Length: 522
Image (cartoon, rainbow, N blue to C red):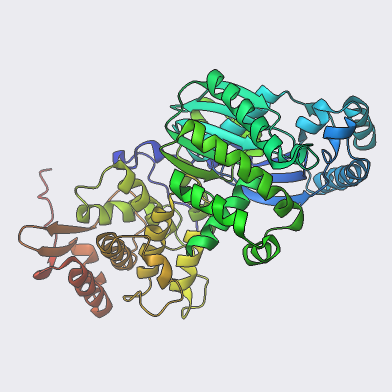
């Protein structure tokens, strides 16, 4: 169906025109970047909504360019062969995808190795691509911008750990502040003389210097990088955490300390298998754990969040205008998904107005989740009816969406589950419900049932809302109002869904009324 966007309605506010449909964002429809790191080389192609793009293609090769560099001062010979082969492949893939260009950046290993400049020229000659070897401060800045891609307006300290370096960057109100780099990459610790005691003293000294430069940083600590993600995955395993989505996973200082102690005592091979971590990554985890222990002891953050967005996403953010950066990544992604997959694109805005009277006290944070749910309410209609509710929950909780806390993912998933079924018991997702309070579970149920009712009242005229809900929390009266020309939409199934919504609200009275026509004064 054709999209029917209600762009001028004031309640839709800044989300009136989806940015993915704006000519100014055309150059962001498909963007390819390559990150040549000390441990891995990765190609990512972003596609979709300009503010919150989907990962059209994502491939990583564990080259280990920085392995052994602490002793030799040179790039790992085998790593160079693997990197060159990967880059040739990535160039061909980019050509096959008809990418307008491929942005390539190289980080610590390439900038520090004696043979880094020579290998840079070799890569450029073999692929025809320009390889940008960036300094540590630039790496820190780009990683911080990656965090801002998913958390607009975020504040705190970003810590990006790679194979051969670790960067810190300060963010506040959507802007990047002080940036600094350090040699605290776990690859450099593998062959360090003096063992654990020497590493401990070295790490302590470096982080002391970092703290003096950065100053007090007691807000949120954002962890970026594969080694941090591996530690977070182990934390999930230790705690029996049910939602295995690393982005926006939250921990506190005590939780991290407990997990680091758990890692120190564990059989690493058994732990690696249980957490599905690669052997190459698991080899670095104990060294990264030593760095993290000193980091949190020094900075004492109020909480800790994992960011799956880093330097590659920062390169994309770099290409965005300020107007695009200020858009909400969650809403923009949902608008793009609705346009691509819904039966009636644009209906989500009107559905939002329909359900809003049930949430008169919703603050801005709750309103955006309700908006997101309304945009996504119909995008899984192609799924088999027997599984549609579970598909909705699974898609929303595990989707690559930015700007969502884990509790908000579960809320969104439950609302969309109740869009298709009355009961949430009997699914294999029940262990996740506990991430929400009982009150929030009920609220999500109300939203889902309201969307289920509203979905029966399809009308294609975007200029008028001929169906509305009213809810009086004092008298516990729920009423569905329809205009005279649409009153025939109130059938048996509509009545059943209205009553079901009333039960979830705790309504004592459930009514249906025909809206009186406004008198004609012409």
